[in-house]
Image 1 (cartoon, rainbow, N blue to C red):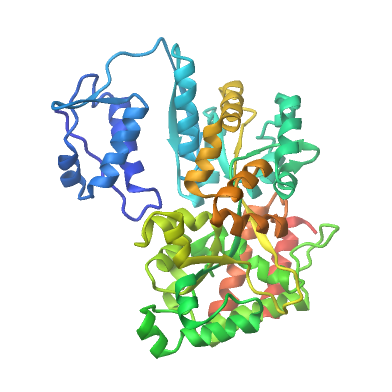
Image 2 (image 1 turned 135 degrees about the vertical axis):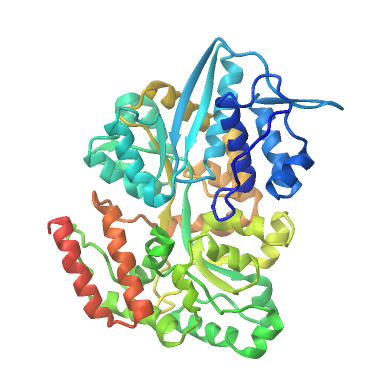
Length: 492
């Protein structure tokens, strides 16, 4: 029995089962586990990594499905013997763990239909701060990945560097079908300079998570206006309410660059709701505006002045905030629908949709007045192909397969996530109360601006939020300073 080494990183956002699965696959790829080798038992793997049996079972089950290992009843688990005629390495540079499994499932089906052309998926999932450097370095060294999954807002920068292959030039008829099927706002975010450069695999919207059970117990409703939110914060900050419900803080949300792009993604609807903008209709900077100052002053009232957020919130990474909601440490958070799986996995409310919805609700962020229409930020993950991709045609075939199969719909249903496609969202809304609650928010969602320098723009905006919300700096002064930096960066 060959030993399986390497360590589980408990601070990683990547699920434990997926880390273990990748460790075993790497051992097989490196030849440290050879065909016919017996793996440690489930109990031995639990003891070796100090983890529970559930992630061990899931990792092994996935490896069996992928044909890497097989089980022999009463004997053990072994590395699969025999190799296909042709093994095709397919390299994915990924920014998001949830949607890697969709590609894994797609490749599993491809391999079943093409037994003589076996695709071996290799996933590189660096920290977000390292993602762009990793991409640029791999292309410069002539080792471009076959596909990358990205936040759609990053695409403009890669378009300007001539990295991305337009899908309409690869298959114009298929792209025509694609654009007719997409949600309008999703399509708009992927259409750049007359071309479609990415295929969206997931959509999400931002808003307010709230503990539905606690709100009902207290006779409260989700906030519509800023004043409503302040009233709720004062209520949930009372010591007797904290003692009864057991929470620590009345609200949590991303506020600094520790949470990365989530800070901008989640907080900008408050600025839009107040009538503020980052850019005007002509593409000029529009930050220096009274409406922007008003929204930032409101956020500063919650954080710096009232102290409703703990000081350690400055260090929170984005996934720690929904985890805190699931653990009962706050009755409200600002976040996105993409956090549903994180909350469901962390909370002890049961795995059924009804059980989760009994505890959990989602609503648009509050606005200055009730007569102002709600607004959310559109988010999502997209698959793109590079001009330098070694297996560009194969990548396109895999994307087509992922979108054309019934199990694509099943994947969104399993995750209870918004699809970029109108028909799938309608189908899931007919079956699931949670989807009926969130799908209408796509109609009020706004994409973040298409900027070639967006990644750097976001860093400046994150710093702007941190200075105002935590250092108590005057909003107008910090915004003007930020605008001057952005003007130099954007050349406006």
